[in-house]
Image (tube, rainbow, N blue to C red):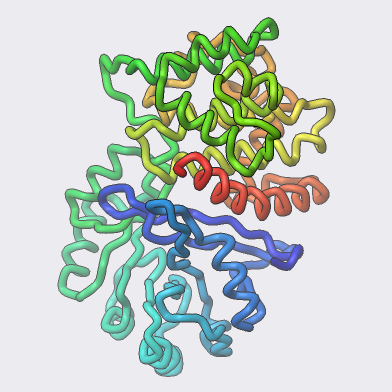
Length: 402
């Protein structure tokens, strides 16, 4: 990836919260966008799409389709990379005027097997020719009143298109959009807890909270950690498999958690224990695990740019920033049960302090809110950390699921 291009990705879900594609968001160093995020050559495009659209499913790495915005200028130029049609969904922006020339370009693209999506769609009669070519119509549900939303859906049901709800911010909105007939969904609702009144923590949830608390205890010992980890047999098995894997190349097999802690050190075991205990939660979308792991890794990698922050502490902060969605509880309620350091608690609850600034910057970068990042050197560090973290998440999940 060219260092002058900033990239982020946002997952696209089906009704069952399976990730079926990613939208790639991008701009150049001058803040201009959308521009084509690759130079039109097949090799560059394939590398980019593999890095930003690959996930682990059923133990195998596969590349999902990428939704990419194209404006009128790009459509006139027709700078299409020679990629397989199933790798891309081309989004036509709402400011494109549907002229005869544009329709000819879109027809040529569809004839080559590519799929067209109409982005931020607001219906009027001029879009009728494009609707005959489009496969997907994306509607920003925050831009329309409930009445307008229903009117748009009724109009679009006359066409052979799949409806995608954009800017879905809560689980309630997700459920409502499903009842309206949307089949695809995009937004950050999956990163927020789905609060259920009277919900009680499961045994695994309690073990995880106890483990997090003990990992932050300065007096923690291999024996005290082992006593907690051993309450969850699956966690024990996965930890021992990973410790004995080729990743660590230890000179002898490790047969107990206490031995593993001594062999690898507290910081490394801290990371893997919290990784496994959070990713084995089956009540959350797989995408949430990927998002939180990537955030934690980015926090760890760029922590050196934020003063005297321990990389292990930065990683823990990134992981805990998603624990409310993983457990479907309010973050402030979880913090009351976790005797973690004041620095981490302050960073999570109010975004204050160096840790809070680090976490906020990482979250802004990942969500493509680059305008909130003022330090150019930090932006470069975050871009590099994101590239590395994407591959790290693939490798890490493969280790955990093996």
